[in-house]
Image (cartoon, rainbow, N blue to C red; front, top):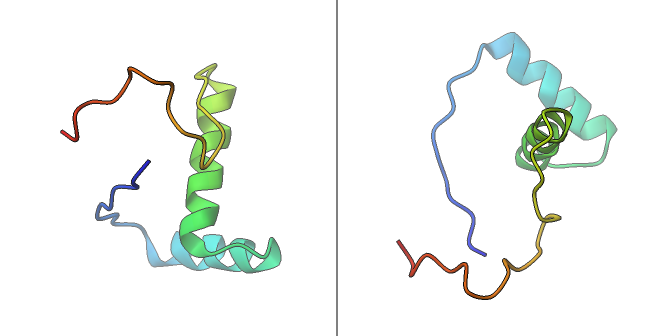
Length: 64
């Protein structure tokens, strides 16, 4: 599954703190943000496939 890029505007202090946290956890900044988003979604009860998992067959959106 291809990842999509998007622009994120964030307070510089928040960005610095997340960057430090990512370094502490040996992750990239992008990886840390995705990790945090997945944790937040899980807490809300939203089930996602594990990172890197292929979507079930028949769920392809036709590349749109």
